[in-house]
Amino acid sequence: MSDTTVVVAGAGPTGLALACALRASGVPVRVLDWAERPSATSRALGLQPRGSEVLDRLGALTDLPQRSVQIGQVITHVNGEPMARLEVGRRTRLVTRPGLLISQAEVEARLRQRLGELGVQVEWGRAVRAADQDDRGVIVGTSDGEVRADWLVGCDGAHSRVRKAAGIEFPGVAVIERFLLADVRAALPLPRDAVSVWLRGNRMVGAFPLPGDDVWRLMAPAPAGLTEDLEPGALLTVLTGVLEDHARLPAVAVREALWTSTFRIHRRLASSYRRGRILLAGDAAHIHSPFGGQGLNTGLGDAENLAWKLALVATGRAGTALLDTYQAERRPIAREVLESTSAMTRMVVGETALARTVRDRVFVPLMNQPFVQRLIWEKSSQLKVTYRTGPLAPRSLHDWTTRGPHAGDRVPDLECVREEGTPTRLHAELGSRWVLLLPTAGAHPCAATARRQLGDDRAVTVLTPAVPRDGRVMLVRPDAHLAWRGTSPAALGRWLTRALGDDQVR
Image (cartoon, rainbow, N blue to C red; front, side, top):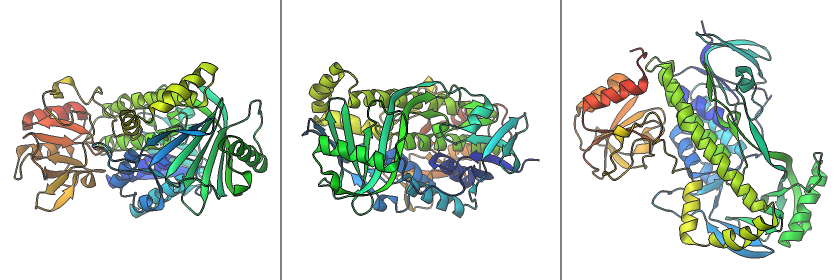
């Protein structure tokens, strides 16, 4: 007999988001964390539009946009002169939300609040020490006893005990030795809706506005030859010195250090996201450079993708093979993020004289071009993430003559109408539920098929787009990606049977 269905190790954004989504789907879950209490430090900052969408679908976004700094541009200086203004807050057809700068601690607080509303509290001071599994479940050894669960998910960071217990390799390399960080209170004569970066040779410094009166994050590579972590006062002296040298901003403008840290940038990717009944998500599965603000958001994407699949398996509506599609869909995304952020880091830092010349004379000026700005902004938003080539989107579902999303693509947040005629939006109905979009209002046999195989009315919501589409039915996954499009209930039933697996229990 299991103590719970799923144990989530780690109460960071990934683990909390996963637990919220599982609990909203009716799955019993426990969240264990080694720390004695929640962290109050900022750590990760960037909440990309995709990350905001995930939190919104979970019911955890609440007032975060109002409490955040909404970033409109990234200003890049070369040798002291402003050379590029990258517009990152402009609305496009794809991106309708701004990028947000807010402390990771604030994001976690909203997720804990939502998890509490769903009836689950984080169990602090319970470090996962070991995990032994068999074909019935996992015995999780903690710092104060054992917990028996059907499934264990490691969301416990780069040094994941769960990953080590599962015997999953975590190969990778260091990209750059060290970076210095400090959250400070400072009177800096800089725009509060912009990230400011200064490049000079192989040195750089960045200033990020944070919520609060005159609060900023400063970041710069550690000086060459630094072999030990600096104490806070020395670290701040180095950062303010770089700020004065390269940004011509007086060191005395920095009045107070709120938090300091030294970190190494690594590029690592787990060899597998699943071993039996143990799975990985977030930093336990992948770590990379923080340039571009992709880490927290990639973890939230992992959580949302895994949650609906694990919920179906845990409730007996899908076979365990569905969990293999989690790695098939999400590991390529992580690999791409690793590659792109590593390339960005090397470009920004300029490791060789040739690299610095190309950076200063080609890449930075290009960032002023509107098409380049749109490309960078839409890419970093993570709204272009697609699972078209994954196992749940076979070629037979791709009709390239049809406009709009194809199987595996994200479906935009459409204005819709519920069955009883109430206006709503597509994404507001997702999170823990599937949505069947019908071309016109009224009964449709596909609805009965979807509800029979996925669950009752609580699992599948039927909507009609406010603006007529192409006349075919669309089944949208809980993570807002298109699962299936067609007109035949029999074809929908066949797709669901293949997707959910032959060993599912009805």
